[in-house]
Image 1 (tube, rainbow, N blue to C red):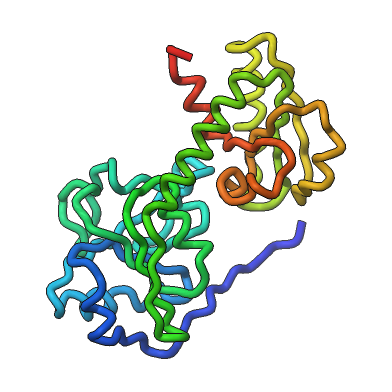
Image 2 (tube, one colour):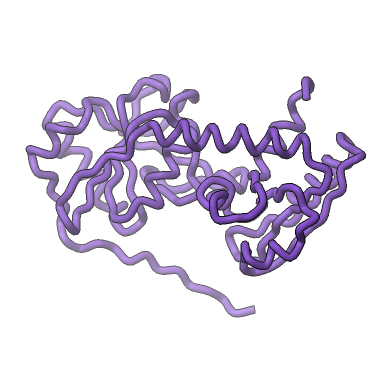
Length: 253
């Protein structure tokens, strides 16, 4: 196996938030960025605090792997933690208030893929500042309702389905075969009439999945964003592994 060395490329130009854009940002925010801009977050927080903004910096849990924590303020595409419901006790830039006690998120970076992760489990607007274009955009919290509706629909579909497919990838950082295999046995123990099939590949191709037309619904055990962002691209319904695990915990189902 070839060793892979990952070296983050840091954005070298100093990020200075324009005053007229700071005025548009709510008073209490949780601040996030991707690894390219992470080293500038403390200075960005100070810029905001000068304008009487309350800035919180938190570490976020990886949605697929239990125990994997990102750096404080770092946002990964699979960091989909619920900050509205939880109580967080983090270091010097965060007080010991409830995580629900904030107005919005502020994301420093380019693109919409990363900040959309925050809307999956949080009904707060995400303000997105791109330091390369010097523009401020907003991802509306209404997107959270769309994600929630899709998730509930997938769970209902799973309960009524007889043939279940579990998708596992070989990709480093996304592969979790032990968790998927455990889920297979747990499903069979809880719902013995369901048939469970496991699909293992490096790339998950939606066109290739169409060959297995007997499958009613797929459980995604790879990148958790597949179960949220790619459901419209797939011919069959897709639900994330965590959602099925929640159903297994529910004694009323």
